[in-house]
Amino acid sequence: MSHRVLLAAELEPLLEPAQLAGLDVTWIAADEPTLRGDYVAIVPLGSRWVGGTEFKHLPKLKIVANCGVGHDNVDLVAAELRGIAVTHTPDVATRRPPILHGRSSSPARGASCRGASW
Image (cartoon, rainbow, N blue to C red; front, side, top):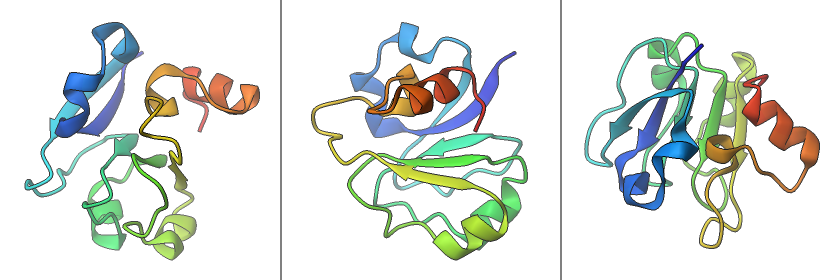
């Protein structure tokens, strides 16, 4: 089963096809509006706001895996109300986002990423 995900287009040169295996990826540039659809994950840069309107238009969204330190660009209250997990990558300059390759500082978290059990 392929999981539909929205990924920041700026990350594309940093990722290898094998890291995206099993994902139906839609690349979205920072200057483009957030798409609508049945995506289960979004991996935005810090410059993209992700809040109530975006959540409304992404009804199957399970996780916002922010590619950067912090999550000031995410409406945490709206995410919590919808049961959407929010993560960030504090060492993004040295590692690829865990949602993409199933690694994490926590083995349990890495396993849940690989198995898409958000």
